[in-house]
Image (cartoon, rainbow, N blue to C red):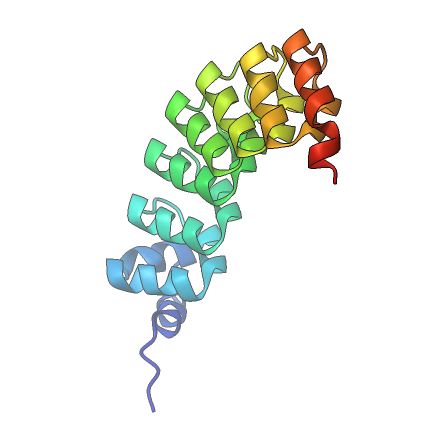
Length: 175
């Protein structure tokens, strides 16, 4: 029985060429199938299409590290899969930063100068994310406390309103 899988085909092709050159000779469908079944191959190929890059990231987010100049679409897919990847993106757009925070609010800690909307999204997702916010506005403090009064622990300079709210609800939420 002859094996016609993309992996078998690429091994046949690599007898005379590099893995990257052999990968380029596969059809787009074969490339996608190969990446979805054997994502390790992606580390050895260059000049992949955006579609193949997205397929690789979908299989294993850390393959993003193998993409030299990812498009914004690829960056978005990567941070939605693993928000910590925002750390390695050179000058991520506001949209990419917001996607990371919306996917997981703790990503706010990795963003220099986050917008107020990002801060609100992070704290709304989990009040404890206020610990990553430098300028803890009264509104952010109340969002954090409404999530759980235990978040008072993370508020650096609580407003009077935050203190009163905490005193009123600390025993209610902790029962």
